[in-house]
Image (cartoon, rainbow, N blue to C red):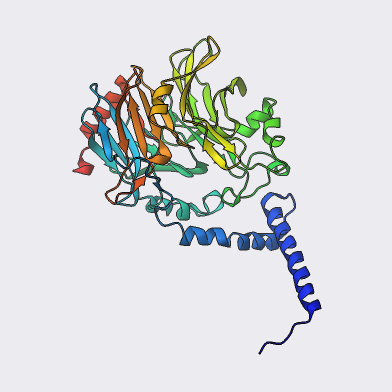
Length: 455
């Protein structure tokens, strides 16, 4: 039925296949990280190589497949515990598993009542953005059914800011778009300084470093992630931006970018995940400085934009950390993921911690460590913490959909688990407690003037 094939033909086919595979791999590598491109030939090779990944996006990942999480707490659902005695609010960003959309809820923590909900039409916002360059995959990866509204910040005039791997967006109380800045792909934290200006990390594209160092591939196509500090006005206009990699080069730290680890080009050596603006002059910093959390360096910097100088560089008992906060005039807190890359991959080596660094004593300490261990807090990545003025502690365990509030003595006051009616648990997105006099006044003004959208 079948004709015999000469053995030499079989061997020749095998040899040609090997040569083709090697050549195809070379073309793909040149398009990704090589200095010499081969025009449409290498671009076509890369497109073909991406077919399995794109099929996985379409066939394997359902609308919320990567937003549902491991159910580590099967007995928990919503709020559990005792409400706060003093007036305070939770700005809770979460994926609503039944709606299959991201929402933000403003919650009164004295009774756990939802006071306001934002639920914007992300697809409509995406339609206003040209789907090219760094936003080539915006609709695919950040559509309405796949978007958590993170990070987030509420402004003094009641606007909600958010933007992760997307434009920076501002919406009003009715979730209508006020502005979206499409000059960069913004990501991670959003902080507002004392002057009302907005600080947020971005990925610069085209990359600001020379082509011979980092190439010019698109972010969505494994190009170099040129993390940058961006300062914007309250209406979304860029006032200042600076590449972190260039800051390293300018401050004699280039060796941390291109000469560590395996002999392979690292497309994400920085991974800026928090910018914390300094709002007052002090013994150890000045107004206008910023603290920077660099996850992939396991490093925290105090940087002075006015003269492009690194004032302080902190490495120590924290690994793949997030969320730097200023405590008084000589201390900072750091959310230590304690995440390490071992033989079997990225793991939390024990539990998360909240690390305090004292600039006066030059010492590190761990805050309420026993409480985090007893409650098994261990988000591998993301996560955040807030130490309140009364020394209470708020923790978000992002990738497990859990938030926790500890009294200053370490006792657990309440938890919230983002469980949907369908029984699944879904991610939360860098929520925060609003509790200072200024924040409470801001919330009260907002609730007085912006109730109509949810009625």
